[in-house]
Image (tube, rainbow, N blue to C red; front, side, top):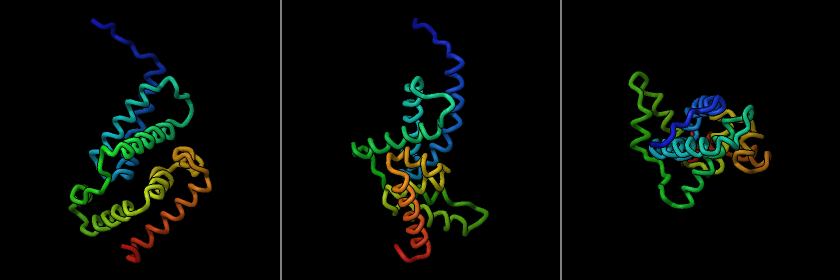
Length: 171
């Protein structure tokens, strides 16, 4: 019978910090992929990879940025392998966005989700990191592996593109 491993206090602190990041990781994964099932797979794989690499994490640094970078790298690897289709599943998005009480709200959310997925992948990633996930430009640039100026440009262009799409100028 294998020996039972007792978690160290450091392992427990890491586990708590990792668990706290999961909702934001899932939101980021959903924004990148547009598919709840793929997003859940990405988050699960990210958590596993983070746990395995926990000895490389520096306590007191930004766990969110560290795990977002792991998720992003895994997502890009999956795209390169071509294992998954990343097109928006409109039926699933519609079912998830429909709310009974306010009939107009789902339309706005649906429009935003559709517009978000029409952005170039780099711009979508940038606006998700800075706008939706709340990272500073410096952190987002580090996660994406690009200069800060590039990140700022991607966010600005993504916001402008979204505004045009939502105003009906681009379809």
